[in-house]
Image 1 (cartoon, each protein chain N blue to C red):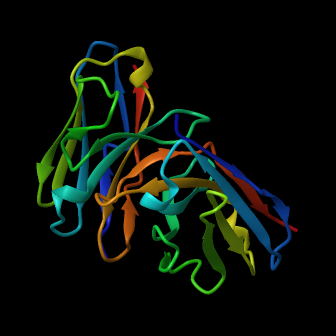
Image 2: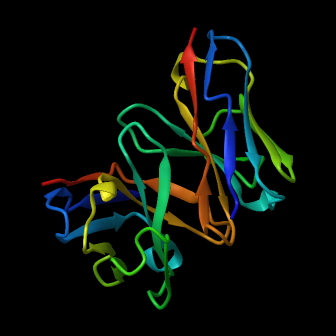
Length: 118
Length: 109
């Protein structure tokens, strides 16, 4: 059974940093691209970042480029999102998910809430 | 930049009725990369349809997807109580890499 479990969310002040983690099990971690997608409560979904299967390539939404860094630890089957220079508008539930060649998100974790507020 | 516009914003129907949800792209997109998700309150999104018309594993056959070019449709042939939820379309392309529609809320009439 596939499981992806996010952690690391919480309350942080504007300008602060936070690192999210996503532990994946039940899937061949090195087969898939991994992603973070966020959702402002009661609002829509926004893709944030992705990393390819071996961690050699990444991509970001314009809104987070230069502030967020996605990485993966293949040995630990874990995905990370380092978030720096956080802004109020980064407040959201952050979901971890994965895609294959057809570029759809197979399965989503339950998400972790990040609140940026003073 | 590709923008996906879903309509209607809210659809109010009764169990047993047929639901038709629309996703319109601002320019022609590949149906290979058009996807539909369902999201229930307090839950993560769930994959329903990929490649515009292929059902994901475990999705009942009352759900179907169709369309090409700029116009895509998710149809639920006969609504069950558990189908009342939010539905999002999504596309993989060049700009942005992964675009989502704003969602359609399907609620009970």
